[in-house]
Length: 508
Image (cartoon, rainbow, N blue to C red):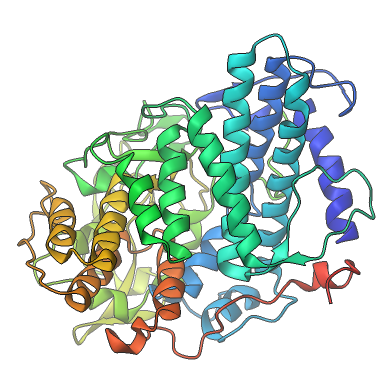
């Protein structure tokens, strides 16, 4: 971990000395060259510090690129797009356990701890801020939320991990692994305090809110098996948001090709269903921050999602299992996947619509109910606007949306013995205007859990949720008692990365 700690220390200083790259809605400027000792004297400077945590969250190590690979490829919804898929990504998807040296897995680990260390610095400096106590307390709530999110990523996928609640200030500040129960205890404490500090109401600028904290608190408690606590947290959010009529409005944003902006006003980002989004920016220059840190006044703030899951690189395709999960006539199928024969460029300002063909798609085939053809994910795709061969985009990644709250509440109700109420929440999702699927009727626990499993699969296909769901349901032995295991033999937890074990003497 020596290398990681040195990087973290340096990154903190860089993070507060540059323009934090949330420029779409979260603009922060600092042209000084401070140290951590001389800085953080005002609430404005503390704001710069927490924006550096957001910057780490959306950089290449995490949501900018590598994060969605660890989730989607450990989940049940993707297959390798073909032999072009790089070895570490293919290993995550094809093998029951990645090697400790897997670079994608190591990137997510490093990115999460960079977030944690930056959040720790903000929290540690907050007591000295006197000029604006109200703003200071909100900033601390944001830092606690972000630290909790990073620790949940680590705990849910690695289990026992080092627990740091103070900033690392030396290259020998190693910590041993803590029991996962202690990690969850810290996460819940952070989110409880964050929910008390953060403003209520919908966030419109990419910042954390009380509702985001309670949504994550519900998800965390579900993962650890406390459904009563999860339900209580989620009910704090219930009724405050509405599902957008058009399902596809959850997955678009700003797309810029050259000087042409295709979605002025950033499409449907921060809509009535959105609880927390990570902000990305498309400058139209076909660039991505390959430095992976998110730093720099002119650093690109784009995301690689549409590129990795698109036509040209074709690294990721939907699994046969997720294709066949959809009920006949469910409109979400065509709003979730493109397949050969479908039209793209339907919203382009420069090109006419054209049909996809197997020959024009650099991906492996898939099988939907016996029909073999080429398919890719439509969610977070830019193909309705542009089919450039290489184009990192600026579509915000939705981390929490209201449909997730409804279906988590449905699972809680199933677990606490009220299947009819579980059906009510599921049917709210199925009644979305653009979906309008037949309501379900549920009368017992197993039936309700099976309905939740199905609805989460078709509602959130390709949204980086399947991995956590599979781990939770496998731990409760719902595979194969309720459904077959979609990834039989898969290891429950990732191994600690070699970059950590080779340098941290406290980890055996």
